[in-house]
Length: 158
Image (tube, rainbow, N blue to C red; front, top):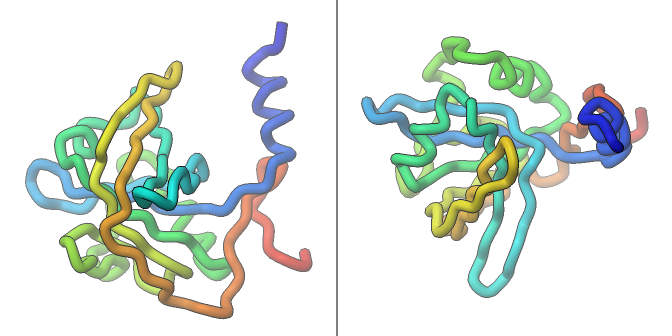
């Protein structure tokens, strides 16, 4: 039998990029969190997925909004990743800009996209949000991504 700790240890050997996934709550305020469970799914139609913990304090905001933004972080944005990893921490409005479809996105990210949730699937203690990509833009071409590997933030060449 594999324990959740052993599974986490094994999965830690798979390097991932870091994103901050955002939406608007019922009051129109930005809500976001650090997510590394993000991947492209399809080119036709353009689909991505994110996985969110069912006990996430902002889960209902993502469920109700049916839209989300994705900001792919650069190696210089570890502070933002840490900020969005902390539960219910106030985040200054100055870190966001409004995407073409109104989603809050993060300044200085490598790339951003705005998605419409087209399906949700149960995934154990998480829910898989399948999103159709409606806008996508590279903001910081030539910069390196922020990576996560073996429980630590990493950078290329480190």
